[in-house]
Length: 462
Ligand code: NAD
Ligand code: UGA
Image 1 (cartoon, rainbow, N blue to C red):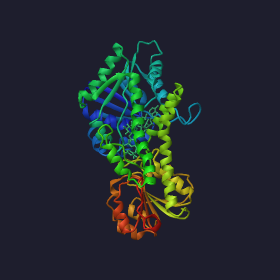
Image 2: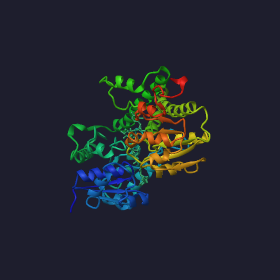
Image 3: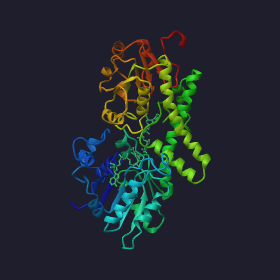
Image 4: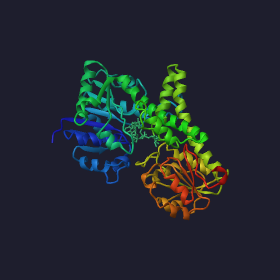
């Protein structure tokens, strides 16, 4: 079969894999190849055991793989043979040198740009899919177009807005697709090529085009706004606990204002995930670089509140459990950074587990999809840790349950049985406010939600 377009994606991660599977599924006349430097990842994409858990992804990959979707480690051949190249490599926070702990580490991205230059034998469209600091496309253009050999590269920005756990749905029905380009003839032509690909399944009014710097910046700003909402409600949850207000009632009342809206107002143990923290710090670093210290401080406070919220959760546990956790066994329900994913990158559970171990508690980690990653995250951490997938077994003999991920399965467990199997007094710290607190209290638990008065059987707190 001859294909109308040939597409390469460099980087077979949480974004590259699902995004390319969706393009292959919606554009059968495109041949899509995903390459990566990590051979194990590619082998997993080619197996029945995909490297990431994402609802609906197995079906999507099964329907397209071998038809017009291919996974390979041959980056050189991929670059040579494809006319459109997405770059979806990781862009973590820099851990060394200038900007350490704040700026984006662009070494993977730059290596990719140089590989594209080295192996290309014809002109190409190169698309930034990774989240990058504003003006990265300029550096990309300078590297790619530094040789006078008749080969021309058009650089586009096409940031990804999918959320893990709902990636397939987000990719199929995106709120918007954003494509930034140079406003030159070549830039506009390249932009149209990408618009045409998305127009195979995305309604035209949802495909936004913009100048390239606006596109790069919009991605950082979107994540900053989303994280800001969570930090805002988490900050208010601290006040609710002091003022005997209920944060769920407050967020409901606030969110019903159509100008504010109800989404992303769930108080929690704080946001996790590979991107919010890194992207906000990246934004903060950019602002400082431009001399905008007041703006930088404003956005940095979103991360500070997130750290504060995680530490507050531990302090509340300590306070409730008579100021000592030493020798107590605590079960963690959930380790993933959110439900419906096995991803634990920047999960608040990592911080909480470490802090509990510092307090010399024993921990039992439970999660339906993230135990493998949890083991890796806690490798080398001193203390007593057990991993038990079944939440009932995990809670057996424990003094407390800390609910850290909002998996649906935790909502309807046999709580009387769990209570009977635990040490007394038995505590539940609901870091996601998803349980029926009144019911748990009636069974006998002392219940500590986030941002609400606790329900306890201790006389002085009632
Ligand atoms: P990831 O770490 O899961 O995947 C990146 C992949 O790139 C890895 O498999 C790595 O081996 C590969 N890679 C690195 N350098 C390479 C090179 N030179 N050649 C070939 N492969 C290379 O990362 P991710 O979560 O998919 O994120 C990728 C980008 O997308 C980041 O910039 C991130 O900020 C952004 N993003 C992520 C999400 C998300 O939900 N995870 C959502 C939107 C945007
Ligand atoms: C987020 C954005 O939602 C995506 O649009 C973006 O593409 C992506 O980051 C990215 O750039 O990587 P993701 O991190 O996968 O997606 O998941 P979210 O649903 O945004 O949740 C992030 C964290 O916030 C989770 O830990 C979640 O539990 C927490 N959260 C979310 C809350 O604590 N309260 C809420 O009300 C909502």
